[in-house]
Image 1 (cartoon, rainbow, N blue to C red):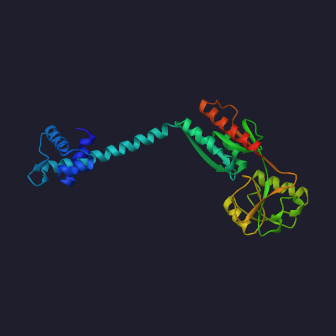
Image 2 (tube, one colour):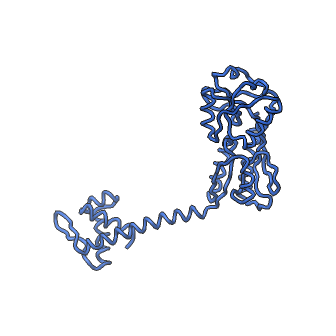
Image 3 (cartoon, rainbow, N blue to C red):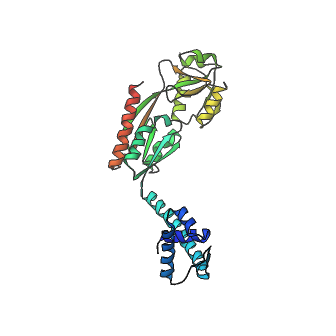
Length: 296
C-alpha cells in the first residue's frame, strides 16, 4: 500500500468507474483495476461491488474511504511541515537599512547572491538611520547600512557617499533652477523626515549656519507621503536617492557646492567571524557601490 494507491482508491470512490478514474490519474482502466485489486488483496476484504454497469462501495469500502482520507490529509500536513523545516534550516542573514535608502541596496548583485547561496535567507528591515548602529551592536541585525558610522565595536566593510539634493514642486519657481544655494531657501517651507534622523539633522544644521530659517510644516517617515506633499507644493524636502527618480510633478535640484553629504557604510560587529557567504555578500555591495560612485 502506498500514497498513490490510496489516491487512486479515493478518486474511484467518487467516479465509481475505473475508466474515469484512469482519465483523471493518467492510468489505463486495467491499471486502476490492478490497484484496487491489490488493495483488496492486502486488506483481505472487498472494497467495491462490481456489476456490469457500475461500481458501488461495500461497507468495508465506506470504512476504508474515511481512513484513507485521513491518511492523505495527514500526509499533506507532513509535507507542509517538511517544507517549513527545510526553510527554517536555511541560514538567516538579517540586514537593516535606513528609511529612504532602498536605492543603495544592490538589487542585481543580491539576486546573484541568493541564487549562488540557496541555503541562505536574507531578511531586510527598515528603521530610522540613528537606530541602525545600535541594532547591529546589540545583535538585532547581522549587518547594517549605517549613516556616518562612529560607534566603537563596528567594522566598516564598504563605504558610499551621497549628495543631498532638494525635491521641489514644479509649481514652485525654484524648480526651474539646475542648482540652488541654501540662502535661496530662506522664505520656503519644508516637509521632511524627522530631524532626529542624521540626514534631517545635518540639513537643518547647515541651514541654521547660513541663517536660513527652516520652517518645517510637515514631517513623516513615509517617503511616498513626503513626495506627495512636495508635489502639492506644501513645502520643499531634501532628497537622497537615485539621480533620476520617476517622480512626476517635482524636480530634483542640486544644492550649490554640495555642502551636505550623506556618508553611508555597510557595517557589522567588529568581533564577527565572517563566513564564505558573508564575504560574498560584502563583495556584492562593494562592487555595486563602486560602480555607483563612478557613475556620479
